[in-house]
Image (cartoon, rainbow, N blue to C red):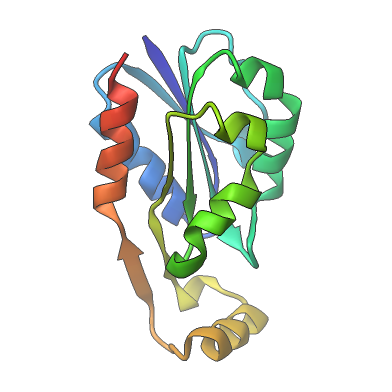
Length: 158
């Protein structure tokens, strides 16, 4: 069995989560940053895990395009999805609207992993927006390792 973890990230939190999943899986795993590598060939993989950061309620454009372009091939794989963001109270709604419903309906898992604010990585406008939305002026990180472990457990089953 082989697994592909494909993700898109802006500041690196989603990459960190993808790497944690890869470390937790025991089979052959490839991790792919779609922004750097482009759309991969899915034929060598039995399982595909798709993840993205969420900004303003939307996943990264590269992941949306990937899900659309590879929709039919993804239907033949064991699938899981995850999102990363700070709006935990909106997580389920964001998952539901982020990925194609026909893929979500056959997915083995769809999880929210938390998110982070890293002010040193943000541009001036992003810092202002985050300060207004969150009231925070300091870095914040909220990693939901329970949900990561849950996804690993589900995807470890054949």
